[in-house]
Length: 314
Image (tube, rainbow, N blue to C red):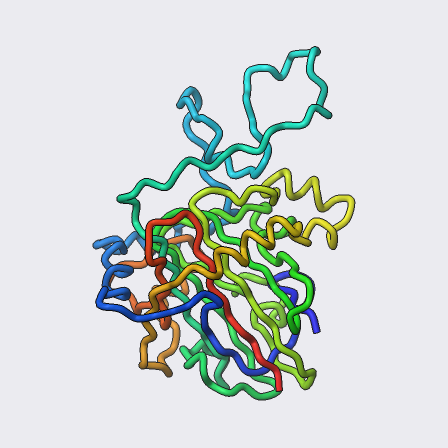
């Protein structure tokens, strides 16, 4: 059984357990409070005339803004600019992979909020305990929220098999994966034209799916995004979604770093209209909006956070 998110078919899964592959622990820090404190104080405009988001590429700086290229959103592309008319270089010249800038000691610790929604008998998205045992026909959706701007990668393994990158995708969000702080991101998307692609559906096929959420301050080295990903996937969609051994080893290394977690105990409430508008129109959540069901925060101001969702099908 293979998981395909938000694209051309959803795998069916059964029981969902949220956890972290890294050692997770609760300490004296107020993890949930620290996460919510970084939410905007005021609610953004929720006017129906607000434009819907069409992609997740990092906004380009104003012309002449002196961008260094480190935030271009293209891993390994190393844009230098200003030499497009040069005939002395060929396009086949290898470009060095840019080295991400060091993380400042006083930088905000990366945090990720995860909320699981289940489709009820009326078709509404209702918050559900990740430890709930799901049955055939149940449908779920995951909403993610970050506490700072950065890049999201989602990988999937089936029964500890080879990893597949299911986000970013060359046919979703303009192949971008840039998230703004506290602007929720949902998988699968309610914006899908086909109702069947708006939920993960549980069927009778047994297996264990592992989702790996990788949130970074800068694009991961070795994985193309934006136009580079689109170009890479033209030749082979399957091959371009397979992380290299080096990339996957790096993800597994970060999985060993401890996370501080906080799980909310209240479930059963339907997704609010504000939450729905935030996910569909790219609006930030305020402190007054419902918090994530599960908050996971890095224990230090590192540049990468890795958390997992285990989807167990019995």
